[in-house]
Image (tube, rainbow, N blue to C red; front, side, top):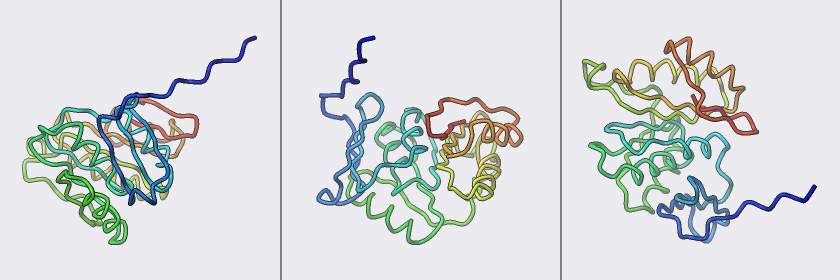
Length: 198
């Protein structure tokens, strides 16, 4: 049986370039969305975030990203949906992670607020109308903490809103938990290393 040809790499420049570390300290380049997004950083992105970058929507009005490495998902959303009514916000769990995210955001010409929070901010009442229409969670490895964020996301989403969860857990476990909270869950993709998105 002849060997399979190596997958071709995109040769055209990426439409969206995101640099998460100073260029001289960012040797890793990752191309996503068929080469449309290029991410430069010191280390490879977690599998769950590579997966989420592949499935991010381009249409949204009010978006939140949670626990994304140096605000990479919020930066990507800002570039994918520049006409959105509100800039995507990146929520981080501690001050050090928030500071790293702000430094990454500062190197781009895109307005992306970064906040250090313990809980999801409550949307103005009524949440069914004024909540977020997109929440993207790069689930922390502490699964009980991720479950808390999923539960809070349920209350922060408007009717018809979308929650994307990337987690390095079994697809069945993530889908079961999300379905228990939301009543429905559709697996979008899984990768060889478990990192389901629901």
